[in-house]
Length: 174
Image (tube, helix red, strand yellow):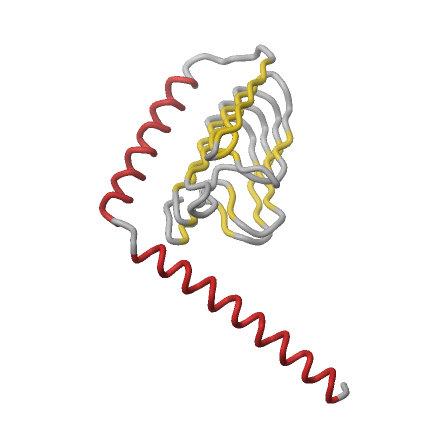
């Protein structure tokens, strides 16, 4: 490696370190402003409401095919049944309720910072695959917010290759 290549590599490393440091300071500033007691109570309330909704929805098997999507400032609300869906990254799902079908999830059920503080999946049936392949959060993980995954039935599989997933909380609740 030449001296100029060595210097360029060192500059890139310094720039990367500066970006990481800036992100850490931004997150520390956000966390210092959080009322932790209110945050915990809100998380407990959200979990209780999700549990109650899942229990009520799970009382009857819904096999009809339907689909409803609505985009909000907090993410997409998506209701579906009777079909196998593929949920791919690139869109934040605030609430996903899927009543049947062998679904594949590569995202969902996670908060994504202060812009998208809530992500919930309620899946009522089907042999689903939860396969996170990238960075970020999924499947019941919370980053500066709340992430919930409730899958009530089926022969499901869970795998995360990177990021944070499956009950992880990073300055949040999962």
